[in-house]
Image 1 (cartoon, rainbow, N blue to C red):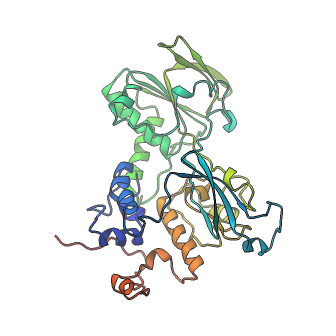
Image 2: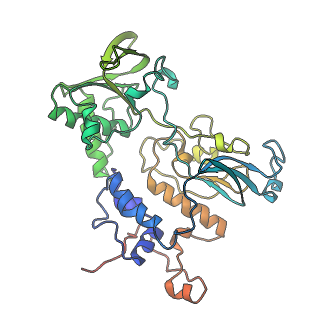
Image 3: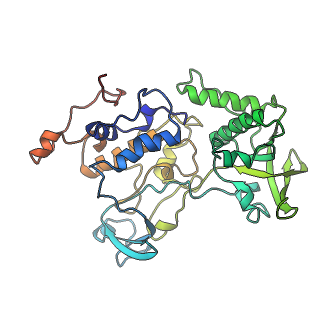
Length: 392
């Protein structure tokens, strides 16, 4: 991750862990790996007293509607709020129905990876070649995963930070296995591929982009950058044990064919709107995120630090009591950071509670809980560190 610990933890989460004697990190300014973030922050929170027993696990939401109400019923008014949400879920292979007053969709976009074909639709043959395509960032620290790419010809598609991460990891792999060859395909033609941020506030991001720009410039003989190019078709060739992929590329008005062993498709993800198709949800026609939030994000550019202050109103819809938060709220906009999601949680819950400040900063003290009442801590200064002080 190129964002540091202090941007990826809520003050509430840190206070809960501190109360249980858990300290996620030693240096708040250091950037964790995804595995560290999971092991040292998310999993301890999931086992904390605040959450334990309150989360229904291994349950998948299939669809959300209103009780005795269709999508077209009662538009534009508050009458729909008088009828509870009806949630169809699945647990252990069995369907079950739940009622709810408030629904917060934080389903993300990771399960909806976009096709890598020209125009954002599957390239002919892409589905048939699925077993040869990695949709995320491969974990090259795993010997089994690295063996799939070492000494092979790899086509990398995409030009976001995920693609940059894969490119840098492939370069390190190629340094250990010189026969590895990478063909890097992306639509962009700008140079440098990743814009430099003056006074870069995220050093890990700056280092990642600098190394990715070096690879995109063609300085590494094992990398062949193909700017302004798209994937037209994919065909599996050879027998079962010697299968390879013949990929048709188009760029600069010219077509070419390349034979590769594997493809890494880091071309982004998109929200899945199917679970709320029976609700009155207003989405942006371009980004597929909530329209009011999408409108405020326009003109912010590609800098993920150029965030907008979240509010319950920005994340709301014509459907009363329904909110989309997290990466799903940004839709296809790739500038989402965990910090934005944490702020959204505070904004939505603060709005629901009618609080003047985010609920994530309003944790009852132990003394107040024993007395059966809520006692809010003092408001923290803006931009102050939320990491609790510890003594050696």
